[in-house]
Amino acid sequence: MSGIDRLTEEFRRAYVVGEHPDAGEFLVRVPEPERAELGRRIRLVLADEPPPDPAPETLVMVRAMLRGQPPLLELRASKGMTRDEVVSRLRGELGLAPPAEERVAVYYHELETGQLRLAGVRDRVFEAVARVMGVARASLVLQGPGASGASPQAVFARAEPGAEVALAALTGPPGEPGEVDDLFTGGPG
Amino acid sequence: MRKGSQHPGRLSSDDYDLDSVVATYWDTVLQWIRSTGKVRGGEAEEVRQDVFVRVIREIRAGNRYPVPIRAAIYQITNWTIMGFVAGAAGHHEREQPIGDGPVHEPADDGALREIDGIGEDEVVEQLLARLGDREGTLMTMLYLEGLTLPEVAQAMDITGNNAHQIHFRAKQRIHEWLVEGGA
Image 1 (tube, one colour):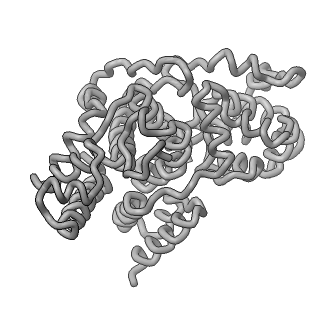
Image 2 (cartoon, each protein chain N blue to C red; image 1 turned 45 degrees about the vertical axis):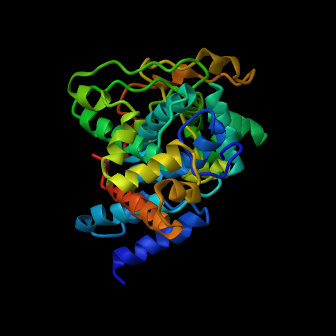
């Protein structure tokens, strides 16, 4: 059995039992010239196998999205987590020092309320948010600004009283962007 | 997922629980996008968002396709990836966020006109074009007209086993075309 055959079967087994295998991570496990073929095999698996049932958390986020509400905020609320708690854990997952927490809070607020351009967010952030929220990375339902660049006003109406964030912190001190800025705006990848 | 029937699906608001369709394919569409290696990191999230804006628009509009819903969603995904890649060299108008309100069509955009001009209803035309006459007839009866496979066999005056074989070949052709990118 070739490496591609073995990886395809590994992907299939994980997919059908709902382990949320990451196709991107599988691709980087083979030399670059073989990635197109492995990708094709993975798509064959996706086309052949019925998708596993979605996690309850995915349904919570999808229903919020379809109502025009921020999915991540809805998930956090359903888990009874405060934003401060999430931000603190997120900073830890990202390996950042405590002084970075205020800046993480600003970006997390933007991510949670659909104001942050998703293409700029590093994979590390998606993975860290997923761990903090207790869901698979692929199951996260995130929304960035659409063509208008604006987020729905309803988002702000649902913000927790007293949880306003210091948007002015984004301007920050003059100089080169820091590590936090890079994590949330330096993507892709 | 489908209300009132175990029959393989069609893309229609009459037949589907929208929440369930989106939730079921949410993870899978991201894997499809990432398997192409053409879209990285958070860009894949943006492409996934645009895919589901299109899928939701189609379902809310009640559009119907004579193909399994999975094939329609993957083909919409292929088109969205093509649009994203083509737009990477220039400006590409993004879809509006998903919500309760009407979702507007993206503005026509120069080089992307050809790709964006493809209506999702052409999923059917392109998929069926890959099939032979008997395969196309069987798939139309099965997915558009809602017949069961035994009913299709009777209507086509073929045996049940033959109908299974034609169905299998048709699905294989569609799968092969989809996984190659559906272009």
